Amino acid sequence: MDYINLRNLLAAKKWKEADEETVRVMLKVGGREKRGWLNRESIEKFPCQDLRTIDQLWVKYSNGRFGFSVQKHIYQSLGGTSEYDREVCQKFGHKVGWRKNNQSVYYHNLTFSEFAVQGHLPYEVIGDGLEEVLFSRVEICRL
Image (cartoon, rainbow, N blue to C red; front, side):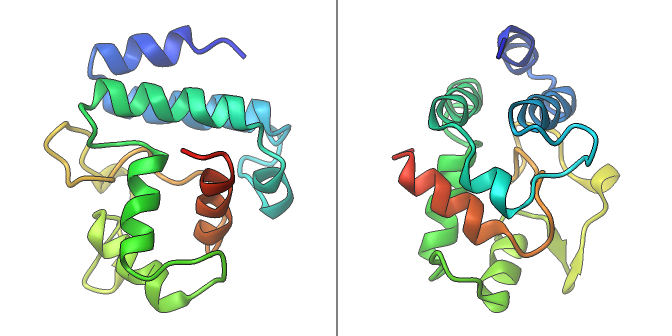
């Protein structure tokens, strides 16, 4: 996979476009372009090298504020494990700004800025309730 476009968008601090590019490349790598989301199986098989590259780009160009590894640390600090826990997922959503007043924030209301709360981006490209699968994969890949 070619990550030059993602790198360029992140370097230019075009956060929304970089988030959209992240979705595009992850769906392509995961073979889920037609479906439009990653499912449990595609996340569990997602290549560590690609996950690491995406994460490293986000971490580098956000000065450590964004990336899957950043999100994993937040998730685990709230008690998140490889087992689904609705309460932890909701706390995580509130902590990274994806939930407000116990409701999910619409995509167009996300904060696409380096001033967003830590872990705010990239936004999830997975189905609801699969955070534990993604962060388990991030852990397995040692990010």
